[in-house]
Amino acid sequence: MSVDYRNAGGLPGRPPSQGDSLADILERVLDKGIVIAGDIQINLLDIELLTIKLRLIVASVDKAKEMGIDWWESDPALNAASSRLALENRNLRERLDRLERGLAPPAAGAEHPPESPADPPREEKDA
Image (cartoon, rainbow, N blue to C red):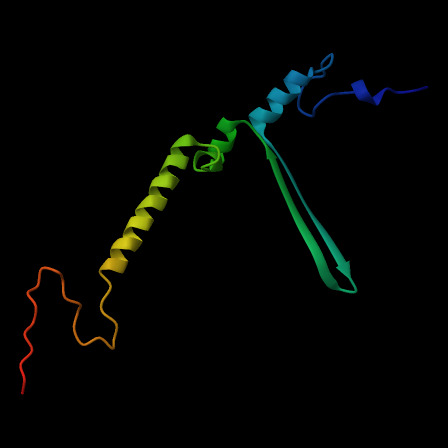
């Protein structure tokens, strides 16, 4: 007697069906989400040589947002608005650096600040 385990029952808590299509399974996974986590560690004589931590989540965008995952909204490579903000931020930092360099106090060894071209020339008196 042989038993075909492939069609024996389906998912726990769900009534047996005639076979779920790939679209049904994908819809269920994206709706609920699935997390796969694992660590790979390579040791030699109790010395850790390599550790790889693997975390994989498969879910719909709505489910991911519900879980607090929304990194794609602020990634400049994936979001045009974030790309513009990153460029504007970089330009503002460069302007601020130029302004700060222009307003820097004189060096400790300098007696007085350099004269501006609008200042009248100083007259030196002979003692």
